[in-house]
Image (cartoon, rainbow, N blue to C red):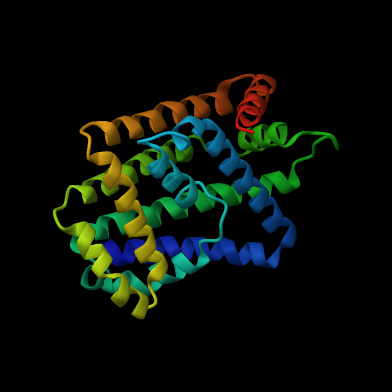
Length: 248
């Protein structure tokens, strides 16, 4: 598939899941609970990066744009509208980044949807904590291959954004696109591309920092995957509780 087909396919998959949630308030509430828990976990795991230079801005970008619990429906709608004219409206260098984001978003939404379905149906004791419930839900869903693919996609998207920062004049070009993008109703997508560029550009001024940032993400997320899939469930839930508590 070309870029436009890939984006349309990804957005259509997300739209189907969103429609299911709109039809089922219990499912929607469960998916939202999963997303919020995951955002808290990410913020806690990377509290040190979020609180210090030079990593705080790219870490905030990852939290808000990739692991956040906010509603991305407007951005998705803009993706669907732009798909056929992606390379005409935006700089060529941004096309691969837009496709990578769309595909990662679709995969993440599918995983969150599966987690939400199981979260809402799982039989647990009334006093079960959210951490224990999350671990139990994760293991019941058991999408190990998809989770590993999700991490690879996150890292690939980070590398795509880093590549954008190496393109001479692209930052100015993106700023110049604000007006045309807004006029075309593509402000959300424009904001994502410009925000990612700016936050990674500041870090990429020093050689090797962007690579180290992505290496930190890979090490810590790989560790969490191992814990969530293979560690004793009680020990895993306890570690989650400690991690979340340290970030308060």
